[in-house]
Amino acid sequence: MRTARVRRLGWVATCLTVCVCAALLADDRPGPQIREVFSKGRDHFVRVIPGESWGDAIGFAGSPKGKYAKALFYHRQGDGSYGLGATVPLQNPVAPVEFFVSDQGYLITLDNWHNMGYGKVLALYGPNGAPIKSYELKDLFSEEEIERFEHSVSSIWWHKGPAYVDEDQKAVFISLDDKGTDLIMDATFGTYRSCKWQDLVHVKDFVCRSSNIGRQWQPY
Image 1 (tube, rainbow, N blue to C red):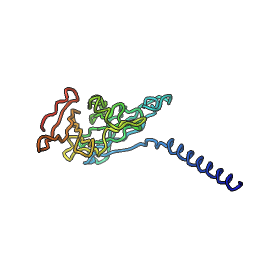
Image 2: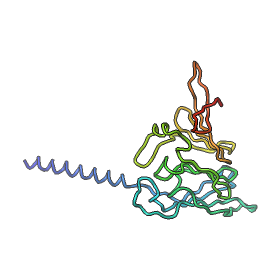
Image 3: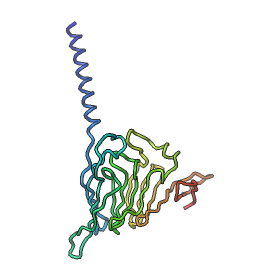
Image 4: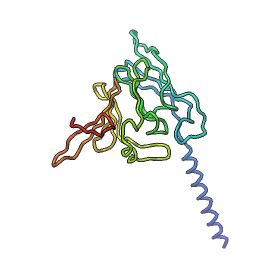
């Protein structure tokens, strides 16, 4: 009898330990850090300082609102040092998940911290920090496409591959899946096209569209 009671107590203690550990892991959200990203040629770099407006993020209702993330643009000087060119607020309440700097000094931000797929998921800023173009998911995809993406409590997983500035430093490629579907944004003007392989009769064709309105895919 005593042995059975000890076993039950041990089982309860184990369950409590597992539950507490799971709760701790669930709440253990790594906070965003100050980060710098250099351009490929290292003539420019941008430092992003996280914001404090968690209350503007999906899934954090009731949290404090405050300053958005900000970016500091640095450019190489004639003596080889870097000088601060501009300090500007970003469209991210807390921080972008990823960001890139082209050889021309343009900044591209991708997604929102702990809010992938919500808010301004893609934005372009000039070398002087001026915002050029920004997109929400509804600007890039149809409602049906967005519904098909995997959803979690606070994120929409709309891309599952690498994102990078191409070799010529003229475009940003975002891989949407493992089937060759890409979203490609011009790294100077912010225009975009979405491209994919389309099955035709006995052949595959590479097609693109420049807008989610009208759903017009054209051979590229």
